[in-house]
Each structure stands twice: as structure tokens, then as C-alpha cells.
Image 1: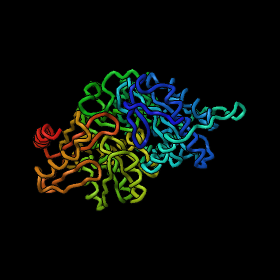
Image 2: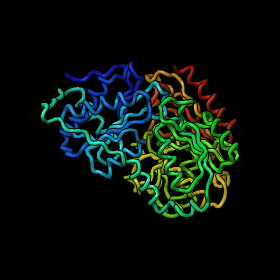
Image 3: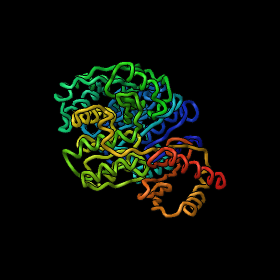
Image 4: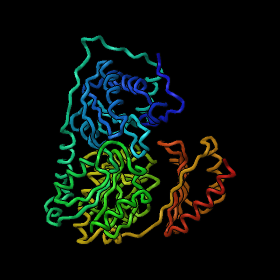
Length: 461
């Protein structure tokens, strides 16, 4: 029979997400994994499917369920164990596997988990692939194999080391120069999967590491999203230890947020801007980001006279556009840096190496590197709002906020380049909320725009 997905399950292009127990159960995860395995086999993919997870308490349970589901339809499975999301994505690409499944809810709280589906190219499913898979999921009976066709599971515990070796081999990262600098780094991995990988990378780069949140037990000591408001502990650690830079990663280590040597949280958008400047000074070329990323990236691209293209929010949307544009660097303003020279995936360890290289390039502290670029204020809100009322809300905003450049590629984006101001309203793909983001030269103007829009939305909802 077709699989019935619970109504409270969040279904996106890349997979499914929800709270553990309801709607996410081992039975449901096994069913979806079996469907994905059958889908890949039907598509003619002959390689194994890689499985990995983050550090969440529910991770081992769901990993066993996913692997069992894949085995039940005759898929070959390579189990990477607990690894960063970019580690699995790179492993799939390097091994020419059929695809992969990542068990992680990224920045969501500990009572959430998710299943993300990966293609043979080491990127998440695109819209067309996802639609095909969901059609298959809803309409096809799953053919289970007999006992003698069940494939044994192969364990691979070297994927993370291969990932880090790939980063250290990049021409953009001068390992010896970073080692000579002997940088003291404060690190907060929120007890996620990134702790061991980040510690190993920084050790290989000769850094002295002062760390919190390094026990990968999935019991997050704070809100796991690495936004500035959640990094007070890291800011204090930077000041108390005299660190030159503070790094915070999310639970699956695909996003990196920065704190400068004064203990000031710089926000996630500057991660991509600084990392991009390191790449562009060595290899000028197109840049791609999403519609919610700070305009500081426009300033970086302009300074190197290279084009910048914006895609809808979502890693796969940015990755696909990067392939089209043959971009040399890109990512998202949430701290996700993508370097095609390695792979088309957001990667926090990669971002950390590029930020350390930025310190070498400028010959000064992180605040000095940040001061090279204009400063903007981003204000973000998320509100409960009926999705069916969004079209009406978009019309109201367009009518009220005139003189803007309008973009409907992903919700509604209004921009006033002459005022260095923009606004983006869109439904979240990871939470049952609507996200509202505004950027302006100072916080008061950005907040005033947000407050004005919230007032307009009250009448629309």
C-alpha cells in the first residue's frame, strides 16, 4: 500500500522533518527509506546508499530504522555513523554512490529530527527529483526482497578524515601560514556532531582551541541555531580566553557563525562575505547566494567586479544556480558556505578554514577583516501566519511599500538599493512559521520596517 504521511509531518523538497514520536517514528522512517531505496534502484542507480546522522538522542534509533528499510528492498548500504552533513554529502560524491540519507534536523531543537535525501551528485534532491520520488512514494507498492538478497551493511568510519583532508588540500587554504600564526580559537559546537571534526581541523591548522559544547550527545545546552542572540556563552569564552576568533556551528555542522576578538557576535551573514573574499582574491568569478542574504555580499562581489546571482532560499536552489552560473563560491546568509572546488554543499569546517585564511590575508584580527566591508543591520522575525493568506499579504505589502524592486521567486522580496534596504517575507521550509527579514544601514531602520510590516500583516491574516 502507498505510504500515508502524517499531516503534521513537514515535507520539503529535500525530505521530511518533525518531532520525535509524533509524527516521526522508526516505522515511518523505515518506510520512507525503503521507498527511497526502491526509487534509486528503479532509476537504475547501481551504487550503494550512504547513511549518516547527527548527534541527536533519537539518531541511533532512526539510523537503524533507515538502514533496515533500505536493506529490505535490496539496497546496498554504507553506514558512516555519526558525521557532519557535509561529510556525508562529500562521501557520496567521491564514491560515486547512488545517493545518501542524512538523519538530522539541523538547527531545530533536540526533540526534532529529519530525514534528508541526497543524490549521486552529493546534493539534496531538486524539485523535479523530489516530485518524482513523492509520486513514487504515494503510488507504488514496495517490493521487499527475499532473505538471500539482503545486502550486508558496510561501515565506513574514515569519511570525516577524508573530508578534512580535502579542505586542507585546497589552494585557498595556506595551512603552513595559518600554523605559523598560531591562532587561538574559541569554539561552540552545541554538543552537536561538529565537535570532533572541528577540533581535529583546528588542531591540523595549529590552532589553540578553547571550547564549549563539545560532547556530541545531542543534548543541546542552548538554542542550537547559531544566531548572534544564542552565542552569549561563546562571546564570554572569547573574552575570557583572549581568543582571536570565535566559531559556532549548528548541530549538523553545515553553518558557521562568527564572534570577533572583542567578544562581539558578528552574525551569520558575514561568514559568507569573508569566506567569499578569500576565494575571489585568488579566483575571481561568479557568486551565487539566496534572496535572504545580506547585501554585504553584493559589496564583496562588486569589489572584485564579478556578478552575483540570487536564488530562492534552500541549499539545493543555491547549489543548482551555482552549477548553472559556474560560480566559484556561494552559499546562504545563515552561515552556509559552498565552495564548488570541494563540493556543492554548505560546509562549516570548510568555512572555518577560509575564515582563518581571511585573518592571514588581512594580517589582523577578525574585527579588522570585518571592517573592510560596509556594516548593515539585519532584523529577523518568525511569526505564525496562515499560508493561504500569504498571497493577499504580498499584495498589501507591494501596494503599501512603493518604489521597491519586486521579486516573487521565493515569497516576496522588496529591495531599495538606493537606500541599502530590503525586506523578504516567505514561508519557512523547516518550521511551521513565516519568516520576515529586513536589512538596512542601521538596526533602528530595519526594525522600523519589520514593525511596519507586522502591523500590515495583522490585518491580512
